[in-house]
Image 1: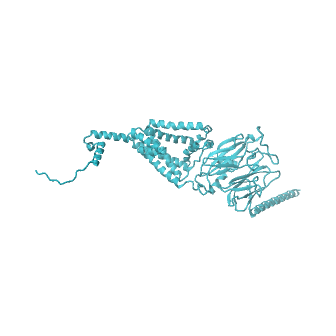
Image 2: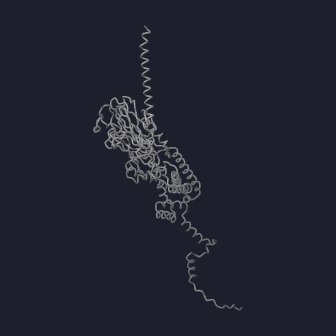
Image 3: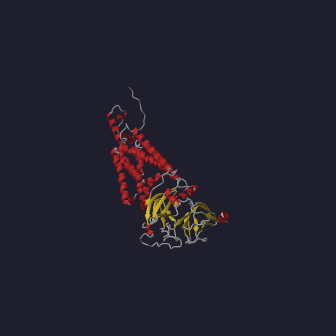
Length: 548
């Protein structure tokens, strides 16, 4: 009896083993066929894969064995700067395809569907290489771009990016709540209530690439850190959260030459689920333009100008107080030739540095106020108002001149050290990228562009920036210490040349031992010289010596 009981069990085991072997053979055959067929690339869920689109040939991306609980799938492709066309069909149309360097498509699965395919080609007839990934979502997960009413695709998971010299703007289509296979998508026009898309929230994330690095390998390595939900939360910086009632648009300060990745995560607070839009990146410059591309942002003329300015700033940092006249003339000349001349003449004639100290204090106050808004405080919502921003900025900038007037020598030396050191940082920026230049540049952008108040002005802080901060601090402190030491026994300010000349003239009048005391006045010397020019000479005749 025991032997008879074991035989059925043994038969079932052999049958199960045969099925496993058969499935393995089928899977292996599929993989071999996918690898051998030209233009066919087989994908797995959640795995990144390098993908190249050659010239004049299309690529078919295939996904098989999709689990039954998956309802939506997003296919995304990322290239550093070349565009690629991704389509649902082999023949792309405006309603079934999209062309960009960060591009993705959403596919809603039908009942019993377990495979998908997408098609890729190069719209510019040039080879395109990049990174591709396929991400799955379930019934309760939101559908990115599921309520698209603006763009061509029915479901639009992409982020649209536009940049100019001042700002970078991203836009996206609203999402929809999730739904199961075979069900109709929930309506996007429901005004309120929990079952509608109005409950969805959008988290905006930002991620900076390494500074001064434009290589494709670095981009491919870092784009993977912003492709799915968990990586975005772990690596990106959350800037803000938008509700469904807010405009689906966010503005940032443009950073030419600096790679930035933007990603959006849509959350459903009822089911505590989320989904990620297709991330988008920019360098705020062009890789392909002939002039002013990402590799030639630093022009020779710019480097020469900032190098000279940096050398002048280094001189001001250590000797600005001693050479008061030269520094003030060159510094104020930037505000206008007449203004510079009048400012120096005011000190030269009357010996009062008050007006010059006020100007110097305003420059230092402008820099201090710019540093204040360069911190995360500058992105507070209250400072989106131009009235609040400029009132606060002006108040901070005006406090510094008042302190400088109270302590003129110390204030002037501090201004020389801090401003001179910052000028050196600007000179270094013309050769290598550093975010410290945006301390003052963001203020100029806000003054020149009315829409810049809506932009986020945060910048990356990496190794080069911390090194530059250290250099700036060392220059400022050493410059102030050196000048305070040199000026400790001297007058508070260099004396007025006019007052020194006047005192010297009085001294010469009263000191009979001074050779200059016996020199006739200038008026008498000029009159004598004129008389000699017009004096008539006597005719030369015969002269007889006197006989004694």
